[in-house]
Each structure stands twice: as structure tokens, then as C-alpha cells.
Image 1 (cartoon, rainbow over the protein chains, first blue to last red):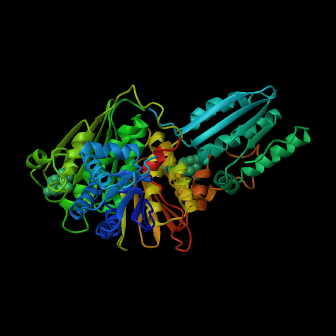
Image 2 (tube, rainbow over the protein chains, first blue to last red; image 1 turned 180 degrees about the vertical axis):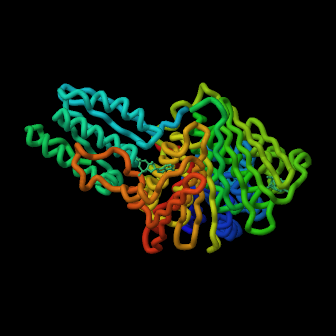
Length: 121
Length: 121
Length: 162
Length: 162
Ligand SMILES: Nc1ncnc2c1ncn2[C@@H]1O[C@H](COP(=O)(O)OP(=O)(O)O)[C@@H](O)[C@H]1O
Ligand SMILES: Nc1ncnc2c1ncn2[C@@H]1O[C@H](COP(=O)(O)OP(=O)(O)O)[C@@H](O)[C@H]1O
């Protein structure tokens, strides 16, 4: 099988894990994303950054994964940042109410003195 | 209906008619192309230039129209130039043998002292 | 195109990796009808949610199918997503379909968003549960918008993207 | 994806303006199988030729349909394009199927290229003429090529082109 409709790349930096999510995050690609993101979400020593600039599609499957990642980070009291969200993805985050949780997380990380992250798209 | 898979634009210059063909030239768009190109092919006072840079698809329907346009120009002994042919379109022109007629036409126009036309793609 | 009803049908294996084909066909049909970019994006998600459910909940084995029917009406598209798997109590599930707006993160239930999203993204959602599940999604055409959104989009040009 | 056969079916009205949907589905299926960009372009033309013929020659009125069946085999794709219109003598037409290589421009016959192009662009073409016409187009997968041609191509990204 060769449909590269989706790709996920992990970049480890000194103080953070950055996950670049590209293409269509749907039921077919969910497992690939989960397999990479879940272990990284368990590392509370680093900030988790999920970079969505090249995400072209998401539905309840992907949104469900985001919710569980955010939950896990909250349990660990570890920071997570969702960055460069394309407008059409943001619309779905707003519609379903998950963006509230991102904002809450951001507040938490800011309170903790994390430096503000680049949000230019 | 709003499928803008195809568009054709006519530009009249002092010595030539330029037809820009864009998108998919298939059975659905053939008539639109024919309606614009045929009357212009009948004007022997000007060179007919068909500019294909943005043509993304062609099949026997479109190739048939090219053949009949070339025929008409030959009957009128009037020059016609097919320009900026994308590689995948050229492949089908070669496969079907129509490119021979373009070359012949080009020879004719050159013999007639037409200035060489820009063929950069 | 005539104003009477035109129908396009697609049938795919009920597996996750085929759902993108439903989106591709929906895109082709909806763009043809003149739907706006945003409406098409909404419908893609709604149709995928219906397909996701067929894949996840309808069949026990790997051999089931999903049949999609795109009805192009003069002022609306009706998309029927049909599986032949086990049924469920739609009325009950529909009542529970909810966004996460009034939930806290630690209480947020993962899953259950599918029906909510279909309802939020389409103008009308009907579900029949006879011989499997039939989800009927309707979106009305707003003829004043989206007339310029689909220029030179083709299956040819897709492939030429980097 | 399992190695056994997977089937995707598409049914469209036999009208010119629906043939792009056949190309779109073919693209989705063939890209999934790992066909190269060039092979997919070739198959798009071959499938369209078969559909063109169904639209032009099979039906007298506007209500006919074309059924496409994409069979994903481990090493090949088989595409079956079926109409239920009038039949024709394939053996005879196939003999006349020819390119324009040996014709002069003024003698060149317009039309008749369809069968030639199907034959030239596919690995195998079979035609059955029972209850309409069934064109069976086969292309083999060359597993050594085309592995990197389909990154991040999606029905979402199509729409974002200018
Ligand atoms: N096609 C279907 N076949 C069987 N059951 C279904 C189908 N669609 C939905 N359901 C049932 O309805 C429930 C709610 O669906 P949904 O809101 O999409 O959320 P989720 O799929 O995340 O559970 C599912 O959990 C399932 O029990
Ligand atoms: N699906 C079909 N139904 C009926 N007749 C067909 C069909 N396909 C092909 N034919 C016949 O075969 C002939 C040759 O087809 P083709 O090589 O595609 O050229 P063209 O369509 O340009 O004539 C057609 O002219 C038609 O008479």
C-alpha cells in the first residue's frame, strides 16, 4: 500500500518533543499517529508540541486522539502546545469544543513560565 | 453547474489569434473548445496559436478536435502553432501520431517565413 | 445538466483505508453541483463519520461493504451511507450525541462525537436501522455563494502537487 | 490491506459531465495500490475512452448508466467499464483501431482512436458484448517504480490549489 495521504514526524529537541502531523488524519491513519504520539505524551520531562500546519483533514477519530493526549498531559501536569492550526481544522476544534481544552492548557503552560510559542501560520 | 475543470480563453493580437486551453479537455468540455476554436481556425488572415501550458488532460476527443483544426488550416494554407505542450500531453500526441502533423505545420509556417515562435515551456 | 435527479453510486469495502474514496467522490459530485469549499469540507467530514461508524460498529468481520449514494437534486445533495451490519438504537444514541463544550477535560468521553458532527455539519440527518444502518445526509445548495471556488481543480492537477 | 481481492464500484449516469468522476475514483484506487504517476495518467485516459464510448455509442436516450468496477489484485488492477446499451462488433472495430502514424493529414479519419488508445495505454484490453458492452482493462503493477509519487495527495489538498 502506498497511499501517502498521511505522515507524522517526530523531532526531539532539548526541551521538547515536536510532532509534525501532515495530510489526512482519519480512521486509516489514526493508529500511526497514536503509536508515535502516545509514548511522547508520557514523557513529562519535555513539552509536547503538536504542529498542525500541514494537516489537511481531521474528523472525530483524530479529535478523539487529541482529547486523550490532552487528558494524559493534564494527568501528568505536563505542558502541551497545539500549533499552527489551519483555519478549517480550527473550525472543527471549535465546533466540537476541544479548542477550549487547548486554551486551558496554554494558560497552564504560560502560568508555568514557559516562553510563548510562535503561533504564526 | 459549476465544475470549472476546463476553460478556454481567446486573445486577439494584430497578427494572430491565441487560444489558451486550460484544465481537462474531455468529452464534457469538447464543445466549448470547438465553439471557440473553429471560427478562429477559419480566419486565414491570422496565425492561429493554441497555447497548452495549462492543459492537464486530453483524450481522443480532444485529439480529434486538434486533427480537424489542423486539417482546416491546411485546407486554408494558413499557419497554426501548438505551443507549450506539457510532457504528459505530448506523450499522447506522440502515441497517436498527431505530433507529426504539428511538425509538418511548423515546417510549412517556417517555409513561409513566419518568425520562429517561442517554444520555452 | 438536467434539473431532474442525477445519481452517483459508490461501493467500497468497509475498511478504514477505503474511506478516502468516499471523500474523493463526494468532492467530485459536490464541486460539480457548485457547493462552496467550506460546504464541501463539512460534507467530507460528515460522510466520513458515517463511514467510520460502518467500519467500527456495523461488521464483525472484514468482509462487509459500504454503499454510498449521492443524489444530486436541483437545490440539495442527499448522501446515503448504507451498511448491512448490526443495527443500533439511533434515537437513544442521538440523544447522547454531544460536543465537548460542557465537559471538563478529565471527564470528557472519548468517542460519541460522530453523530454530533454529522448533525452539526449537515442541514439534515436521518437514520434508518432496517437491515443494517442507512444514514441520510442532506445539504442544501446556497446558490449565492461559492461560485468561484473550483477553478481548474482536477484529478490530473492533484497529482502534480509536490 | 489484505492480499486478497478488493473491489470498489462506481456507477454514474452515461453523460459526458460525469466521466471525470470515473477518473477521480480510478486515481484514488490506483494511487492506493502504488501505481506510478505515469501509469495512473495512462489509465485515466483508457478508462475515459471506455466511458466516452458508452456515452457516445451505447445509448439512444439520456437515461443510461455506466458501471465501473475496480478490482485491486495483488499485482494488477482490472477495471471493468460496463454499459447496457447496444452492442457492436468488437473484432471488426479492433482491427480498424489505429493511430494516425501512417496517415496523411488530409486523409486522417477523425474518430476511431478510442480503442487504439485503450490498447496502447493498458497491458490488456478485453471486450465482451453481451447485454451491452463490457470493457475489461488490465494494468500490472511494477513494484520497482513509482513508490514516491503520491505523498500528501488528498481530496483536501486538491481544493486548496489556486
Ligand atoms: N453504522 C452503525 N452500525 C452500528 N452501530 C452504529 C452505527 N453508527 C453508530 N452506531 C452506534 O452509535 C454509537 C454512537 O456513534 P457516534 O456518535 O458516531 O460515536 P462513536 O462512533 O465514537 O461511538 C456508536 O458507538 C455505535 O454504538
Ligand atoms: N460501448 C460501446 N457501445 C456501442 N458501440 C461501441 C462501444 N464502444 C465502441 N463502439 C463502437 O466501436 C467504434 C470504435 O470505437 P473507438 O475506437 O473508441 O472510436 P470512436 O468512438 O471515435 O468511433 C465506435 O465508433 C462504435 O461504433
